[in-house]
Length: 124
Image 1 (cartoon, rainbow, N blue to C red):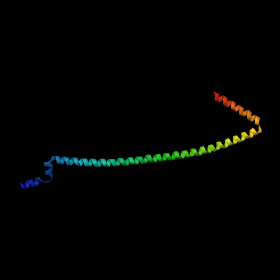
Image 2: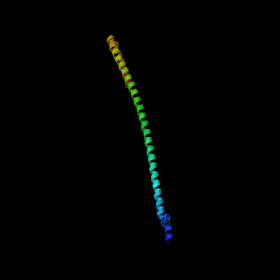
Image 3: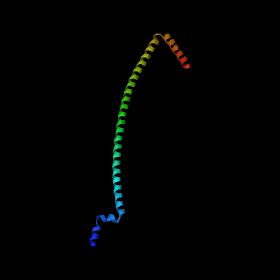
Image 4: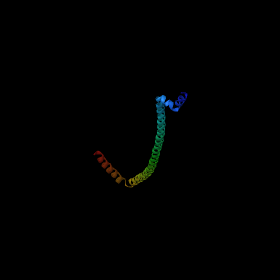
């Protein structure tokens, strides 16, 4: 009998004596596998999210650089246009002063006519 007890008390004896222990070990192993798989998927998701965020950041930086370039172009254009307008205005003022000195009556009548027309337009 001693021999039969020794042959039964091997590796398989725990499983036959306690079926709940085997189920518990299987559940623990499955839980550990799930935990490992979840951690791996979380790492993959984190890496994918980081890569996507980097793509968005790069695209935003590129668009910002384009907008800055366009704004600089517009600013240059506006500065040039303003300088040209300033020059033209100065030329008109200079010419008006010259004509006023040469022909004061004509300048006075012209100013009166312009004022009358503007007054009538504003009145409507």
